Length: 281
DNA sequence: CACTGAGCCTGCTAGC
DNA sequence: TGCTAGCAGGCTCAGT
Image (cartoon, rainbow, N blue to C red):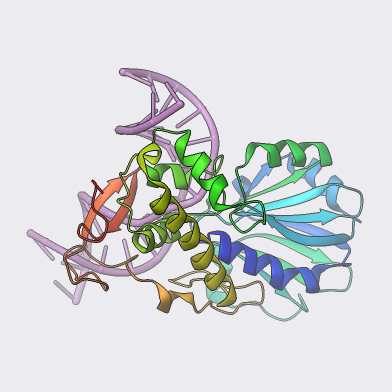
């Protein structure tokens, strides 16, 4: 499940290889993968444009085009963006049924989009639409401006379950189920804790945990549990660093040995240690 | 505002 | 062994 570190890695690996390339063709193999505009309008908007840069905002990959417009790609659950230097070379047959879209460049290289579950979305946005979308998103946790004070202010202003709050992309971007569970465990905060009732010490610990965990994951090119690959097809190496995500209930906490518990928070499966992360502090 | 549930999807797996 | 129900989860929308 690509979250901030995975999306960041895809953007970083694609940026140097896509920059300057001219889009010569687009193929859509699953109609719902293109969210907007219509296929004909999309093709008209991107054909002949060259790529200025590949970046990231939240969990969204933003491909900036020479005319000011942008292509955005959301990988959702199983999306994979892969650069291939030569489209004439055969693609792996076993993957073809999951190919949802394809960009072809003027020099015969290509960018393919695989997405088993079909949740991924591609859009074209004008400069205005992009800034509108940008404004609807929350704070970037690895930006200079994301201070411990800012996080404390965010938590104080809401009365929500902390896990649901951290998953809300309009508040803080980039965190998904994996890194939220990891960060809450590191900071020793119960996932159901009311955000406004988290004290300054826990809040500061949460800030450090989020920044550290995301930074480490990026340095290891992301967490590959199953589908995720970088823009060049390499798996990440952060999966070995996960402390509790993916473990079953009753397995011992890696810190204290207490059996872990599983609950559902914000409709997401949640693993935590009832001893390290007590509900009342 | 906070929260819940359905829907979008396919592949894996636990359990019969 | 073979089948099926249930689960996985990012995000949106409708409803309480």
